[in-house]
Image (cartoon, rainbow, N blue to C red; front, side, top):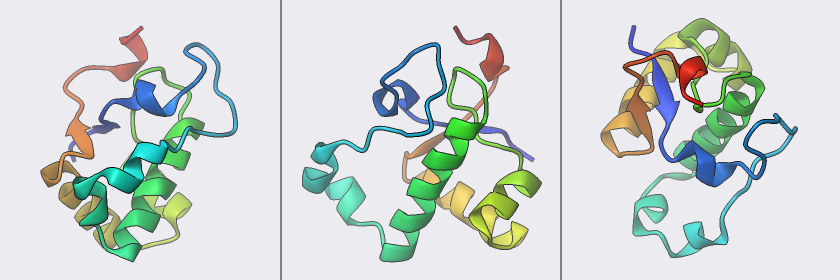
Length: 104
């Protein structure tokens, strides 16, 4: 299974070396055609992935493994995998080709 990270994760974080219990949600998303093309369910899952990623104590925005993420999203592993692949194809996630914990 591929490992994913949130594209431009630093844009969602205010603190660079701490892990606060929140993320930034940019007002600019309202003007983003890319964000606007997402369905309501896709928006909900994407934001939940961002929130879940905050709980993954790595600096690089590494998304949890499939099993843990599907539990955190409260959806099946098949649906989680489908969303991960969809968000990668739409540019919201990127494949992580290195250990994100070493991306300081």
